[in-house]
Length: 260
Image 1: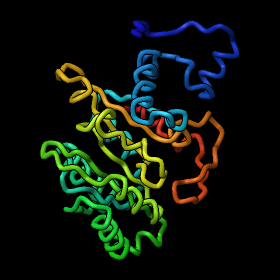
Image 2: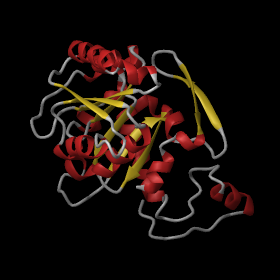
Image 3: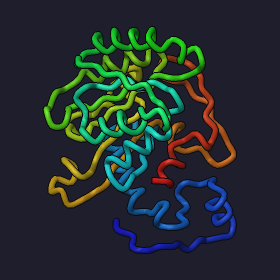
């Protein structure tokens, strides 16, 4: 479905009010924000990635794969948070973490690396990092785990399920760039155990999904509650480890998607 328009007609004034007040994500205002073509593509990605659990997830498209990564990290990371990342990630992602988010005059993120591929190796490294940055954690800072599997360009495959479980057991969120694997060959959200599913999945359409290198776009897939809440409202839900969290509307990924 290709919708070639900049603005939209509304059936009634109530729809206009809901759209401009941020109450309804499917009432489009301008194509630079959302449009039916983008929403249709994102919904297809959720169906492919989550399968029978697609109703639990939502996706937002971005202008590139790096815009998707930057949008998600900008949304999640706060000043002096900690990122534990796999050593074998895309060069652009490495530069973004080290040169931008890790810069003291920006967010001063502590960026730590893991050379392993298994859940046990990541679990051990998480405990080391928690001890190293105990002062930051005591001040309310968070640890985020960032993976790419299979890795670009080396092709290493990480044990995403057990790494996710290790992160969730400790209460931390995990992000997986699954661009090379695609949802068809590497469907990380189809695990029966919610502890084994990452919190966010990233794809760059530019590579395997588009195939020919003629498309520049990216997508982030996450739990419904973390992606959109009507403006002025909040939602309480259980994280994979059973902890309850409350998310207000302005802490969902929608705002970052609009900015990117």
